[in-house]
Structures are given as structure tokens and as C-alpha cells.
Length: 186
Image (tube, rainbow, N blue to C red; front, side, top):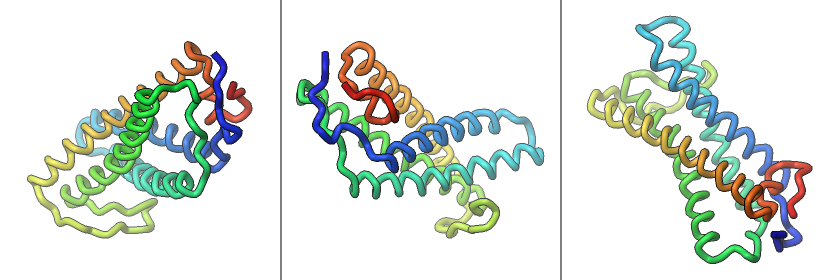
């Protein structure tokens, strides 16, 4: 089935670049997080991974804010005309959930680090503000929220990919071409 995409059928280059940077960064941060917490004890390598994980989290937070500005300032391609109201609603809810989790995961990680008594110093240069002091109860809360929201984000990303592939392979509606340069959108 061919799509009836509007003449504005692709995202602009800034949105595409940020989309793929976010995708790579999220998967890297998640993999790094899973790996580093399984390293026994406190080693220089483990501490380095924790710092890299924090730096990546701050970078991803900044990227998602930039992405939101780009999205607001850009024309967003319309959904295919043959999509029903429920399909559009689910797509919008999925994208909203992705944005909420892309914002929430690094915020919870930042608060977890502060509640643990460790400031976040981006790339070892820019110290982020200490908005809460060391606090054992909050540490456990933010640790749980960071871990659960991180897993939730990865599940949302997997669902996002599966739905894009479903639309591309089964429906043939060209949605995947909106974010992959050079791919046809119809």
C-alpha cells in the first residue's frame, strides 16, 4: 500500500542527525550501565565507566532539549492519510512517552549521583549544580527510578523500532524513509 504522505514527507537534516545520535547514545548508555554495575568492587576502570556514563547522560539530556527545540521550529511530516485516528493517537502517545523517558532517565541519574554524595562534573570540566545533598533514602529512590526508567526507555525504543519496521515491511507506507536519508518514502 502506497502512502499519501504530504509534500513535506521527511524530517529535516538536523532532526535526522539528532535522532540517530540519540539512538546510538541511549543504547550505549544502557549497555554501559548494565556492564559497569556488574564489575565487582571499586576499580579505576569502573569509576571511569561511571564518569563516562554520567557524561553521556548529560550530553543526551542536552541533545533531547535541542531535539525539542528543533522539532518545535521544524515542520513535522504528516502521518499517512490512510492511518486511522487510533493509529495516529498511539504514534503520538509513543513519541510523547519517548520524550518523557529521554528527559526522565538522565534527571533520575543526576539526582541519584547527588544523593549518593557524588557531584556530576561534565567531561571533568563543568560541575553541574548540587540541588540535593547526600541522602541515603533519596539515593535508593533515585537509583530505582533511574534503573526502571532506563529499562522503560529501552523497551520504548525497541517498540519504536518494531513499529517502524512493521510500517515499512508489512504496511509499505514509507514511514521509515522519513528518518533514513536516501530511502524512499513511498
